[in-house]
Each structure stands twice: as structure tokens, then as C-alpha cells.
Image (cartoon, rainbow, N blue to C red):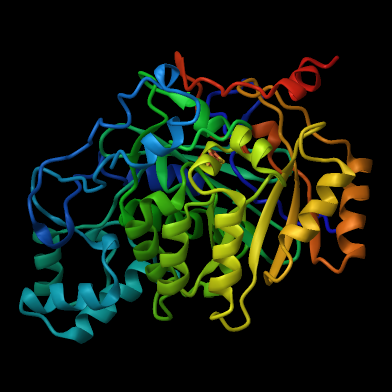
Length: 458
Ligand code: SF4
């Protein structure tokens, strides 16, 4: 059984757990002291725009919606333009790909070579600058221009909590006061992973996930993160923890949010992360996860070389409609048919299916056999993930022995399958333990009659 990093997903619970060990290493303290007050953020290319947080979806009262409609309504809601504009119209550097940074630098009268020197200080050479003051070896006039026109930071460090297994959860405050979480999962085989968030909250309302349950005035999704806010989570991970845990080698977009609902910013952020002169993550080690937004998934496979993970979690539409409402819009046939078709055109590429195992819901041997049939013809790996219980969900985890039995059925049929056990759960940094439960919660879906007894424990 592979018992490696579980960077797994969401089931998110935020909040302050009194058992957390608050770890504030001196390096972090010093960074805090270096940090200016919450950065003023600005749009790409210095265009002053007012913040646009559409409340279309967020103001929906899900409890008032027919159960069949909630996911599609949320999907079509066009929530939240992600640009955040500061008062001073400075350009947020980490929101740009290199080609864009180069043009921007040239537009201010400086050479492309200076753009590259800046890029390397932002992302490479173990520098990861957070302010103009940290720029060394750059032309004085260039630094002066950056001081006037550029903003270096998109996030303010708020707290770091360390689990007994070494998993760290970082809390960041955004310019508008919202809080996101990022998780660092150290691994003893030299593979350290940062799990980044792509949205504040989530509209998908997966029934096993605490992020999806968190709400403010019944909004599951508050807003998309900007590309800069996503990129900077990885930059912070390297800046804060490289000395402590070693190189951060992997990125998974499995924190708060449905990444492909914020596809423009996610693809842009991933492009920055894999740039060979900067952070230089291997595209195979940057994994974007989705609950199954089929059109966006197609676009992602066409536009990005990064890896894709799909949260599957059920083998029938009946169960998936219930536990992942997005299935009512894009059912299993549509999702898996699209993958089967699209992956024919990708060379040497495997999708990762994530399967959170829920006792009595999706863990029968019939499920195992159906799963084998469903993934036929799709180049894939399958992660069987143990469920992290939380007070926002009625589910219970499948017992280890049953997970192993399930795994063995898949393996015997020739599937590449792994078991992923939970990491960081004592610090609420595990799969499904990010976020904070507020006064309002997105309502749970109606439980299909035949599962009522399972959930009631009868
Ligand atoms: S898509 Fe959203 S609700 Fe579903 S598991 Fe991911 S974060 Fe949770």
C-alpha cells in the first residue's frame, strides 16, 4: 500500500481548533515584520478598475432552489470578477506571465534583460522578493520605477499551524480582508507539495466537503482568486519552508475552490509556476483538480500542459447527483466520454481520478466493478482517499480493510491505483479540513431514500 503524501482534497473546515500547535518560526516572524500593511493591489497593466464582486450567485438562497437546479444556477452565475484594484493603480507583478512582464518593463523604458533580472528575483535563485527593498543588483532607475509603479505582494501572512505529522496550514489575508488557506505537505521522499486555493469558498456544494458548505449569507463562493494571489501561495511556500522541509517540488490546486470555475486565472498562474526561468515546477508536478466542469476541462486539456485530476467519487449518476451536484449538469457519461475523447490527443498523459471513500455510499464491491468499467479506455491513475470526517457532513469513512479490498479489486483488473491516507487532520489541514464554518451554511442535498439508513447509522 502506498502511504505517501496525501495532498488530497477539500472536505474543508476552516476555523480555529484549540488543539492546533501554532508554529511561528523566527523566519516567519521576521517576514511578518518585513511585510507592509496589506498590500494595495492593482489590475494587470495598471488599469484602474473598481472591484467587481458580483453577488449574483452568492446572494442565491440555495435552500430555496429545487435540488436539481442549484449547481447549474451557481455555475451560470458569473460570480465575481477576480481583479482587485488598489487605490494607487500599481501593477501587480505576480499576475503577469513573463512575456507580459517583459512588455510592461519595456513600456516603462527599460530593456528586456532587466525584465528577466526582475523575474528571477521574483521567482528564482532562492530570492522570492516581496518588496522593492529586497531587490539587489538592479539598476537604480529601474528600482525607482518599480517603487512607483509595481506592487510585489498579493497576500499577507496571517498564521501558520503545524500538524503532528509535519503538515503546515498557512492562513493568508487578502487585500479585501477575506482569508484563504494553503497547505504544505512535506514528504520523506524529497517530494514536498503545496496545496493552493483558487477561490474563496466554493459554489459546487459537494456533500462531503466543508469548503463547499461554508457560506456567508448563504453564499458558497465569495470570489475567484487572482492569478497573483494563486502564484504567491507557491512563492510563499518556497520562501517560508524551503530551508525547513527542503525544496517544494509539487503543486496541487486542491485547496479551497473549484479551480476550473476560475480557469483564466488558474491557467495563467500555472503558466507562471512552470516557467523555466522562475519557479520552474515541472508541468507534470502541477496538478489542477476539478469536480467535473466539462467545457472548462476540455479547454484546460487544450491550453495547458499541466496535470489534471478529476474528483469522481461515485460510480452511478444517482449517487454522484447527490454527493456532487455538478453531476446534474455534467453527468458521468458526459464527463468520462469527454476524457476518453480528449486524452486520445494527449501524448503520454494520464488523468488522476480521485475517489473519496464514504462508508456505505460508494465503497461496495459493485462500486469497484463499476469503476473498472467506467474508466475503460481512459489513460488514468486512481487515488482512493480516506474521508476526513467533519461536522459539516453526515458521512463516515470507509474502514481501512475495506479500502484495501476495494483497491485489490481494481488492481486485479489492471488499474493503477493508490491508497491515500489522511495527513494533517489534527491541524485541520487535511483533505476537507480547510476553511471556517460561519453562521450560515450551504444546505445539504436531500439524501436518496435508500441511503437514509446508512447515514443514520441504522
Ligand atoms: S469542488 Fe468545491 S465543494 Fe467540491 S470538493 Fe472541491 S472545494 Fe469542495
